[in-house]
Image (tube, rainbow, N blue to C red; front, side, top):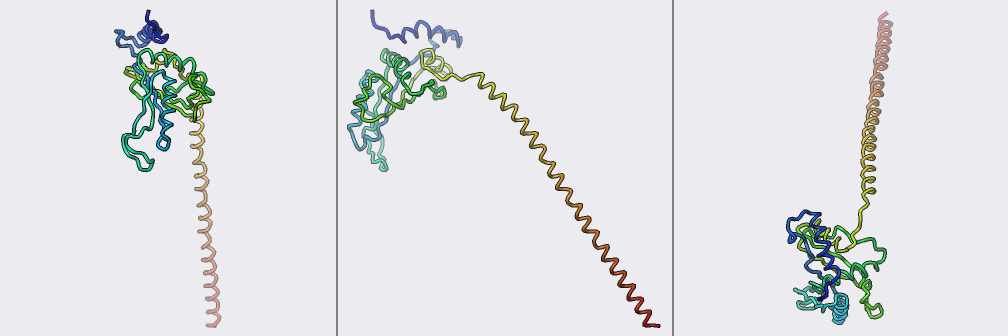
Length: 253
């Protein structure tokens, strides 16, 4: 009997039936499946030291179980001292049984060794059913010997599916065992309630602000008092005129 990876057997026995019930597919061929996994790593420092490419190829080969190849630059970049045709990265594409074996090792052995691991992000889908996972340290894989590595570096792991939407791809990868972060619905609802309660309070405070304007409008009352002052000037003028008349009368006599 030929060897069948654990995840491949689980996909055929349970995942297909679960996805068919969840999305109500009419045909088994509509159920999304994992087509390939691409592991890529950029080595920008290889411009000055070409030996780094060999070390990166050896690491990716040990991790994936398949011979990795070097990626070559497509154009010249003078600011980076880069010429067309120089190796600047490493990649490997996994399909079939090796793909399921790598995913099994990633889920069961590598990701639990990540420091303070709480799950992978749900927002890393590209809108076409493909998922991108970034690994910061290559030492999480048990195939890597810490004593032989030159520098701690990361890599990108891309899961390519034939799903029509991100929701279907999320359900597929979750059924295959990829640990996504769980959002607490209770916490979400409590945050929404707090936002709704705080919003009317701010509105009432802002509505009370016009009271100051009413107080400011009372200031013109002083202007009316100031306008009454000319009354005294008119009385002074009348008294001066009466004094002048009296003096004129005395001179005439």
